[in-house]
Amino acid sequence: MSFAELGLAPPLLRAVTEQGYTEPTPIQAQAIPPILKRLDIMGCAQTGTGKTASFTLPLLHLLAPLATSSPSPAKHPVRALVLTPTRELAAQVEESVRTYGKYIPLRTALLYGGVDIKPQIKTMQTGVEIVVATPGRLIDHLEQRSISLGQVQILVLDEADRMLDMGFMPAITRILAALPPMRQNLLFSATFSDDIKKLAQGFMRNPTMIEVARRNAPTELVTHQVYEVDQLHKHALLRHIVRSRDIQQALVFTRMKRDAEKLARQLVRDGLSATAIHGDRSQSERTEALDQFKRGEVKLLVATDVAARGIDIDQLPFVINYEIPNTPEDYVHRIGRTGRAGSLGEAISLVSPDERDYLQAIEKLLKRPIDRLPLPLLDGARPASTENRERPSRDRAVLALTEEERRERNAQRMVREAKASGSTRRERDVPATASAPPPASTSPYPHFDFSKPYEPSPTAASTPTVVESLFADKQLPPGKAQPRSVGALLGRKKAS
Ligand code: AMP
Image 1 (tube, protein in one colour):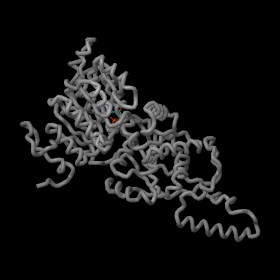
Image 2 (cartoon, helix red, strand yellow):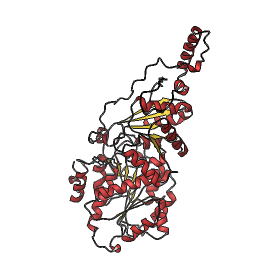
Image 3 (tube, protein in one colour):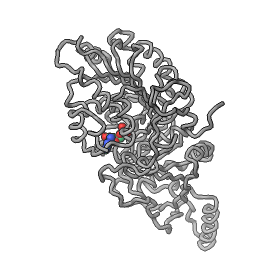
Image 4 (cartoon, rainbow, N blue to C red):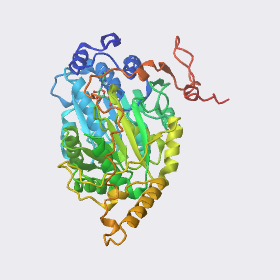
């Protein structure tokens, strides 16, 4: 199928061609036709599937006839509102709107918090048709009456699950109340929890359900691996993984903001280029950190779940969970940063004993166990790399030994000490691992060319198309297939 067959307007076809897209991704192929028919839809799609274009392209198509070159602000009312949970995602969506809409004279505004509101107010005064906003800042604009939503025709909630996780429900309720009742609603979410279904039932009209992957299924292009290691040795293990696998770039996750900051500082002290992105950093610092990472100037971007939301980095081969998330859905979101748009990726998790329950929950969601990798025995010698400014440490030598290895080491040490009896040399001066060979790369794709062009994921492409009504109890327009409930869609038995 081509984009032209989806019925998109020529200026949009031109823009997608310029992007190098040759065919729609599965979510685009399924979502664009019903959106063009002005139906409400609920799309279950992870980031990396092309979901942004799946709503921005038809949105632009529907609004294109209303585009005008009139300078009068009154001729440019807000006609579409896209809500996203984070500033980063808002910025990326707005960039997509600009990219795909470059040949259509519609005006776009980006409204998020953490920056001065005045320039945003000025932009709104000139008249803007498409607004991409985070809920909190949009409420600020509503309170200051710098925005009117009375003519909105299309509402998009992007990453709705995350908006609920972040406590935006009250803000969303207020925003919904400011919108005209007759409008088209599009909701996208990586996971469909009961809360999401409840939210959807509250404001959507008989939405069509679109799903391109199994429920909560992380892309199968990602290899999942676990190191079981105690918390104390995670830092040294991470350093080792980065060096031994020659990782050029990775997104590293911690659960807490302060840990992200601390880890980034430690990595810098190790001589690795690293920076952190989390909610305590100003918007300009976050943008700068992300840009540095995207430009390849920074090797390791340490992030919290919230801050990483919506980060769009093509061809990021590694995601490292320095701490695994305490909700399995966050794992799905995290690994959504790798294995994007058809490339392969690896998700490496460092799991300490106190995180085992979280790991179990993740494995339950994935419906399979994750491979455990043996802990590496580290070379005590200083690597030749100029990047490494650190002195060989005892910490490195004892890193992450299993009980068995520790016992063996002790036995070897006792033999050495017995042989060297009489020597005054202290055990601490003996490079305990000096004889261990440097560990070989365990990457299954050491020579993989991640710069290859996008190819549709075989998984996604072969996933059966599911376009069905969400609410079985509501009447469908004549000629539509008999709906199934969400429960049925997700493989559960229908409640009697
Ligand atoms: P998203 O899921 O919206 O975050 O998109 C993931 C990436 O896929 C983005 O970098 C898009 O530029 C890219 N993309 C979107 N649609 C297509 C397509 N039809 N063909 C190739 N790449 C695409």
